[in-house]
Amino acid sequence: MARRIIHGLQLEYDFLLESTVFTIEFLHGGLMMHIPMKEYRGGYLDYFDGVDGEMFGLIELKDFIEQLGYNSDHVNAWHVHGISLQDGSHIIDSDQLAYKVMNLIPENRIARIVLEHVHHGIFEEEHDLELGDSDSFESVRGSDEEDNVVKFLKYNP
Image (tube, rainbow, N blue to C red):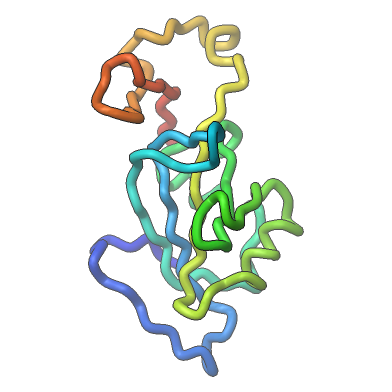
């Protein structure tokens, strides 16, 4: 398994020889909306190629999330197995649901996972930080307006 460096490149898999190997496409750094419908705004795409479905579980998923620069304890990973988040998706929060990803890989061998950054109210208590501290937080915009800035703790593994 390797994180893709060249974003335009897409690997071709020989399904007969590599029936359990696939690519994970991560959409991250944006804003998950739940009302009026589930959708994701903004963000970045990153890919991990050569993922072996027989070895893929929650630990591997958390490792990928941390390689993207996030604390895996503060992120919900949504596996999108429909046309959109609204059409078909579920949160991967157990090995059993991580294994389900392998059973729902589309013909193009790319599994789509969207990262939702969750705030559990622990940042201010544990770290005594304020939401305006730009040195301790990274900003993610849901739109061009300054009022719609969501801030998350930076994570450097």
